[in-house]
Structures are given as structure tokens and as C-alpha cells.
Amino acid sequence: MSEDSETIAASNGFFANRSRLLQWSALILLSSIIAGAMILWRLPAALLVGPMLGAIALGGWGGSIRFPKTAFGAAQSMVGLLIGGSLEMSVLLSFFDIWPILALAVIATVSASSFLGWLVSRLKVLPGSTAIWGSAPGAATAMVLMAGAFGADQRLVAFMQYLRVIFVSVGAALIARIWVDFSGEEVAATSYFPAFDGLPLLIAVTIGLAGAAFGRLVRLPAPYFLGAFLAGAVAHLGFGLPVDLPPWLLGICFTVIGWRIGLEFDRALLLVALKALPQIVLSILALMAFCGGVAWFLHWEWGIDPLTAYLATSPGGMDTVAVIAAASPDVNISLIMAVQLARFLFVLLLGPAISRMVAGTVKA
Image (cartoon, rainbow, N blue to C red):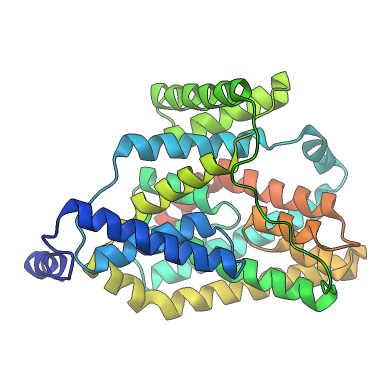
């Protein structure tokens, strides 16, 4: 698409040349409707995916508003703090007891996702290394936040990652319902405004922002996210500090991230994403099938029950898998979270190097 046609595509649409107030009002309304529907249908990552879809729709209709980079950086730091502060020493120590299972599950899944990303890139379905970053399993938000720092199109990476999160999470929930009877069980509603102590929250936020500043200082990739992640991990594992963030704050952060990414979409980019949709869906289904095969092998070789094995190897949506596992009786939650966390840390620490290496073979 030429530069002139891109300009025309961006200038067309109902919201082209409309007031900022009208655009922001429409964005809030669209995001609320989509996120509310996702919460009602119990779909994962509603407060992130809903605002992102609302922002994408606004951009497709000619919207031109943008979200401040400082707010985006602050939101990234809170997500990094949350993940770093959620690491538990008991789970990390359990890695030594089940290392063959961890090695197989992690290496097989990462290898399969890297191959699928390489294949999508090789077929030129998506530009550059975007497909490789978009295919990385188990750390959707982290991969999206780091992809831009390594030259990938962050918007298309987000499109791939969160589409996979939805597919995989819904698939895991359906598989769990096949094995487990949830009838008569009530799903606990999330309280977004629980009572909380202001001082621990202030300390936690300060740790996250200090970590983000450190990340900028030492020039980490995705400095706000990784800096806060390291700060949260050190504070929790090293000093025993609780790093708890209230749901309302996390909801705001997820919304900011979703808006920031979604507002970068325009009509030209939407056409690229929609054109690649069939291939992306096929790659997601192929990865899910492969992980199902790994789960079957774990069941056959080590006698792990099928549902535990499937949830442990499910490629992404670690928080959603944790919720499904907690609601499923007779599964080994420790094993599930150990495998999920091991893969998350593997992808977080080595994902950039693997993605750059695979991207280099595509260019070659």
C-alpha cells in the first residue's frame, strides 16, 4: 500500500476530524461494552482485551487520539511489579524435583511455537520478526511489551498474543469441563474495590516505579516492565515484602495498555491483520494440538492425570490456567503452576535471544 493510500485510509471514517472529546467518549463507551460482555461470558483478560478492541475499532473508524507514553510506562511497571512479586520460592525450589517434566514441557512448547512463528514469517504472512514474537508462548503481555524494543510491530504482536490467549484459555476451560462437573458450583465474583491498607500499596507502587527508573537507567529492553519485574521479585523473594496491588489499580493499568496498543491501529494495519487471520488461527490451533500431544506423553510416561498434564502444558494464559486449576478438584496445582512458571521465566529471560536468532534465519 502506497503512502498516499495509507494517508487516505487513515483520514476516512466516521471519527476522522471529530473532536477529541467525542473520540474519548466513544472509546470509553466501546471499551466498557466489550469488556463488560467479556466479563459476562467469563472470557480471559477482559479488562485488557476489551479496551484494546475498542481502541482498534475507533482507529478503524478514523480515530486520531493517542495515549500518553508516560501513562503507558507507568502501567507497564505495575504489571511487571505484579508478576515479579507473585513469584514464590516454594514453587521455584520444586523445579529441582521435577526437572525432566519441566525440561520436556518447556523446551517442546517453545520449540514448536518458534517453528510456527518462523513458518508464518517465512511465508511472509506478517512483516519481519512480528510473527516470531507473536508466537512466543506463556507471557503474552511481557512479549508484547518487549517486542517493540526489538523492532517487531507491537500492534500485530498484541493481535497474535491476545488472540491466542483467548483461544487457549477457552480451550482449557472446555477441556476442564469435560473432565470435571462444575454444576452447582458458584464462580467467585471479583471484588474490584476491596478494603486495603494505603501504606503497603504506596510501598509497592514506589518499588515498581523505582524498578522502572532503574530499567531506564541501565537501558534494559522494555525497561519499565523488566525493571519493575526485577524489583518486585527482589522485594518479595529477597525481603519478604508483600507486593499486592488492588484489582481496581490493575484494571486501570490493563486498560491503559490496551488503549495504548489499540490506538496505534489504523485501517491499513487492520487490513494486514485481517488478511493474516486464517494463518494465525491455524498456527494457534496447531500449537494447541502439539501441546495436547505433549500432555498425552506426560500422562503416558509419568502417569500424570490427563487434566493436570493438559493444564500444565497449555500454551499461555498462566493466570487463567491458575483459576481453572483452582476450580478443578483432584488436579496437581503445584505441578501445573511449576510448569507454567518455568516456561514463563524461560520465555521472559531467553525469549528475546531466541526470537532474534529465529528472525535472523528468516532474513537469511
